[in-house]
Length: 309
Image (cartoon, helix red, strand yellow):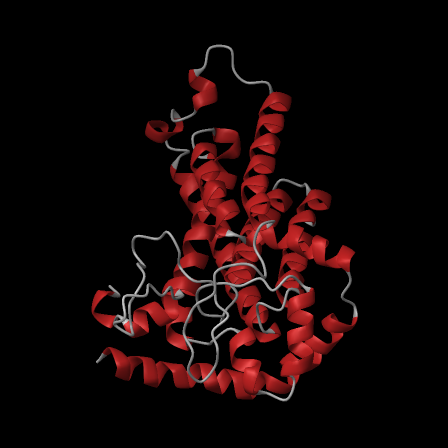
């Protein structure tokens, strides 16, 4: 049953490849033409804003913000946006599309020589899962749209534009680094934007419930006898966000061409990041020769379907 499911759903990924091939390659050529050392470092900075090491702690911050009346709207918006975007992208669409990363599928395409040069020049980063839609782009836009709408609802229109601008740069960084097809990031943009907008309206609805007397008392600032200095609170939040960014960006500095790659060799030589030091994805001995072989999440599940769940 599992191999049949892989065969049927993988056809969708192939269709996306063929449908958007011309568009994807044209955009790749534009990004490849402007590559340089400075832009590569800038791309790595902005791609960190969409990484799970940044997004997950941000969701935790959202939970904390829910306990303060003044920031409750932002907290719920963050939680709902991240939950909806993650569910749609990682649980529904990626397993449905099963689109393979471009640094794998393009090996048999005429563009491979040029693409490989661009990919290596950008640092040869790799992921361990499927490609469509872009999870980093989804995360960036779900957060950006939710926060932008929250700030605009309070009349802070100038500040609200900061978030979408960062999200666009995250989206561009994924293509610049050659780890996603351009059509992948468009998919992430659509999912993230919808998730962020839905989260904003859900947040407004939930906050209305907290206006009732029984729930209105849930406010840490109100409980505190001295209250909180708004400037101090803002500073603490900024420091926390900077710390989350460092948690995402600093580990990424060691990623790249020297990363452990998946050992799958079939219709292509897999360049996905292998799962190393991961109890869930333990090394497999597919040749029964006693040699430990590490695979990405995709090929580990294909080679070991009984343990995949």
